[in-house]
Image (tube, rainbow, N blue to C red; front, side):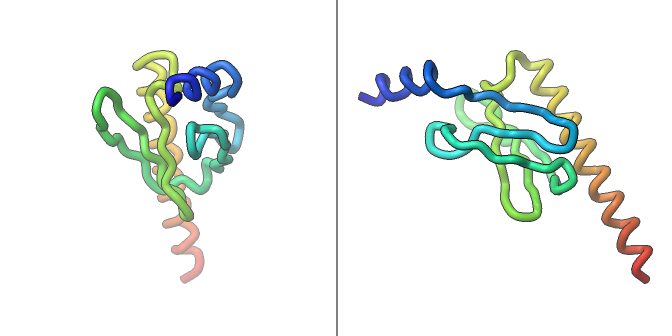
Length: 105
């Protein structure tokens, strides 16, 4: 029964990571049937989490932590490029937060 459900999901549900100008849209939830919009400006931390047989990229925002499974990307080069891009956004956000704090004092 589970195999049938997974097969139907794979055929009928579009599970893609979409990188837009100011945000990304990520499949989430049970069987990745929902989506979440994650503004790049809200990213605080990015790190790898190793699970059996794969690697998951975790992205922490102010409100929640999201997981991007490596299987959502076509190859390892794409995974590394995404990781580098999101880490850059997290660093920019940390830098901007420090700049904003210094202007308040």
